[in-house]
Image 1 (cartoon, rainbow, N blue to C red):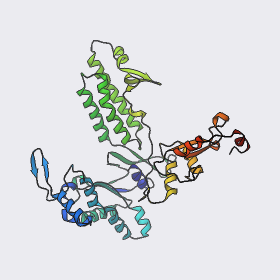
Image 2 (image 1 turned 90 degrees about the horizontal axis):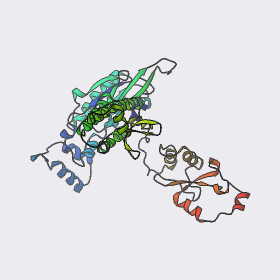
Image 3 (image 1 turned 45 degrees about the vertical axis):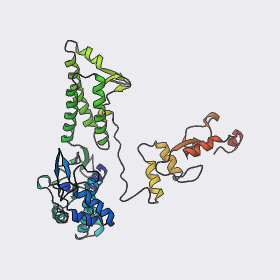
Image 4 (image 1 turned 180 degrees about the vertical axis):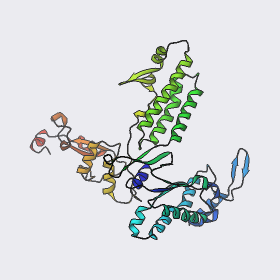
Length: 398
């Protein structure tokens, strides 16, 4: 999602319609949704029964004459089906504008996640028109935009979307030819929310052992950091680590008010590598720091691409740039055009790949690219299952 936002606004400043649909799950029209599903009768009947089943909340039964039940397993899917086509309607509107249809479609961007969406365009008037178009389109599903959460803003002022703050910051011409930089980072609201959550856990474990506190904090920190690991989060991570350190230090002083600060520090903090301020019981059980999370840019899958669409060239190029794949394996993938050097079959997503030394290291072979080839795991096993004739390798090592 951050990747889509960045690509939409990184070339020019734009006006943004930051919108939210009022009571999306509760107000969806059942008849319109079932008509949109356009499925076979038995499936239609099953989904209709699901929609009309009602909701039990704290012992009280409520009928569901409209909307999809909140918390239902199928509800998010049905809500997405109800809102499917919004992007297409905006593209149709873009084609009706003056100028090149292709350029107009590229210039007008809609990014949606469930019932939250943003529409971006350089012209304020076009964004206002889009708001009217979407309002009319939503009426077919008995939905409408929520006025209190719908606003038109500019990228220079910034806006929050899905917990991210997206903004253009004006800079000098020597820093950027465009005169601005696009920075996406965690929103202030979500940073404070995360800090409150950590503080609450610490307050709830005032008398608990350090091991229990680490066990409860660790998944919260990892989950939050992983969500924001694809945007500019380093400064926020460092600030959160500082705030958390203060909170943990007060936790330690409260438990041992008769001891010195140096004693508390030595008891609860230790050293791992070059960092002397790790909250830990031992080297295997410690609290990870926000700032230690690596920033990895996610490369979005193009449009309606699928691993099963038969475009093996695209998927192999994508595999070569995967953040979890080493750069050397990426280079070998590119050199071999995505094919196994042993069986000649094209690598697919999920295949286990291994590097094979053409001249074995035992015979003086190096780890350089020219002495390596990429094989399937089972092909590598086959390769090592055969005896190597060193004299043949000497004659023709590659």
